[in-house]
Image (cartoon, rainbow, N blue to C red; front, side):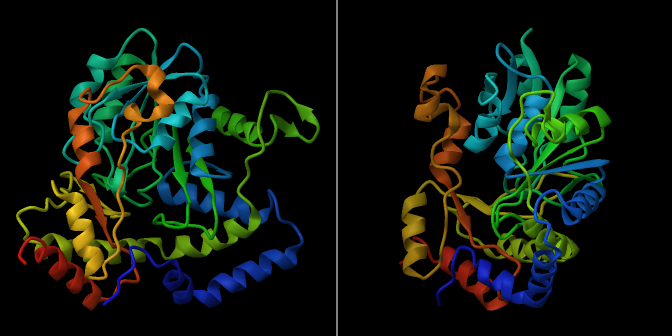
Length: 366
């Protein structure tokens, strides 16, 4: 059996008529940028998450950069972020001239809240928790710490569309939350896209200016902005996918339960679920001390896998100037050395899930 790590064509084929109808309607409208379809999707997605304002942008990366910029964070400021985050989260900080201050993650891959306060200095302006793999960080605790110290919060929600903590959706705990609509995400476009969400009317207005050259009206530039707009075609398709997001999340949760119940190989650690949290399993990350051998074994069995992420940000060449060395964040480095993601997508068949479980359990048994 051959099981790809992901299969985006299956997702398209499943609802092909709905996508094609939405695309053709958008094309026939003759209006392709900052139009009615974007406004409808911004409103519906903000409402789904539980926020007032949605601002569609080019990508999740742009959402992070513009969120930090809209909050006035820049040169000389510090932002606390977990050391196992994907590089995009950290680039959102450094692209604005601010300095990332890393702390270790917890056993759920989220920011370790017990380490945040010791990282706060007089230059700290914000906390940037990253909801990796589909599960939220402990946002109730993050919010308490931020309020206590007068800090801003930017949520990186690129992988967790629809996840919750105690019934409250990730993306609704912060000053600004940032989402990616990259095609593989729980809510994915057929190209790139992203969005910022906020409850603050002033931040909403500033973000809308930032994404449109710093303008409220054409040719009148009040601030220095960029060109970053979610287009009408992607917004139309995302509007379709949003209708099925909960259904698709539930299917991935079913697959994850089967993995968690069925994988019994003692050399493979399955992901834990934070108490009180809903995990939407954008990815299913396992840990294995023989990660590369496991990946090779699964490839021989026809099972596609992927690594998220092999080099943590503090050890990337682009951040050598920050002066970090191997061993500075041992848990983050262990995750980088041991993590392997198994296939998990809503269109997987039950027999494929069973085959992956069997393949993982057979590792080391030959």
